Image 1 (cartoon, one colour):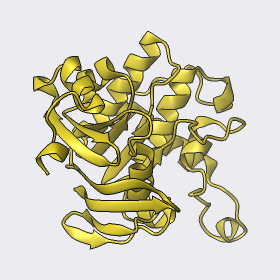
Image 2 (cartoon, one colour):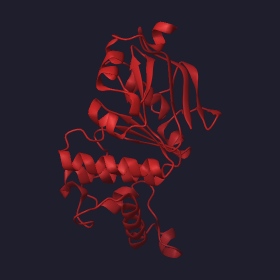
Image 3 (cartoon, one colour):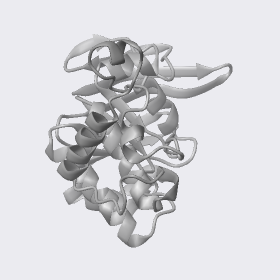
Length: 251
């Protein structure tokens, strides 16, 4: 569904990506892991339109694309859930789902900019139900919800508008065990809808529990790929630290 081929990204004298490859298919969860400084954030920024690579190419469904802004990526069905969530805490969950994409009423009221809040709430409730997102109160500001519920709303918002791929940056960071499991369940439901999910995480047991595949970056390049069902924690750590033979070594 989405493929990066030999991406290079330089910041002055620093080369953050040096021929990085990556791919995610429809209906699969791919974990992107690596130590600090491995190039994960830069790669995700290039694939979500926040940065542009200096070399290499990006393909979506087999076609070369230029992602010169996050807006361009969103128009192609690529959404991102950032670690800080980027939600509006004073708005309710439905308003957050439609933030920047609000529905207006029909007729004169719509031309005057009046919002169709009932339609947005109805669609939001159905979307939450489909993803298995349970909210204690859907009418309160999102800032009053638990951390797991806020994260679930952020994931649901991305999924509502994504048709191809969703990037999730540390979606369970700072969550308790129960809240973490609820978010992971939402991720599985997203995958089951045929959307590609890219999970960026430092939590290796979590990666192995939810991912279908794991791709490892080290020093700006992909150095290993694993099928999660066949991988172990030791395999992942060895690839991240360079303690095992990798794609980079073979190159």
